[in-house]
Length: 158
Image 1 (cartoon, rainbow, N blue to C red):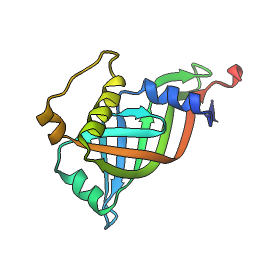
Image 2 (tube, rainbow, N blue to C red):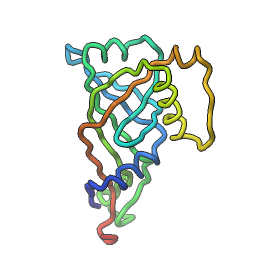
Image 3 (cartoon, rainbow, N blue to C red):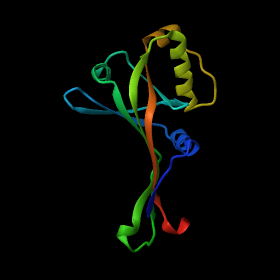
């Protein structure tokens, strides 16, 4: 099996759109890692996330805003030869991006971020109550670097 590296923006964004959850990795100033599965929105190289106003992740990000975000498609077991164990591999694709979290405080920008989040999961419009928008913490991550790979590609299809 082969691993392919993709650099085309369209391919990268297609993989991100296929995902329902991303994993946000951060590190506290003492180096302690912390990873959260989160739902997300994505548009034009920017990842939008939301959370409660307080918590461990907010405390960590206030000290160190650098994050690594991983998106991975559902994996499927594939093989080259049914009788050869080392020919088996998981077929999937992933995108890894790095950037810094900025917390959005503007009401209208928070509403737009929530719309982008919901577009990842639904094609219908939504409305939001003012207290909900005020009380949500919106994370904005402009991806500064991106890596994209596809795993488990059979040799014979290349």
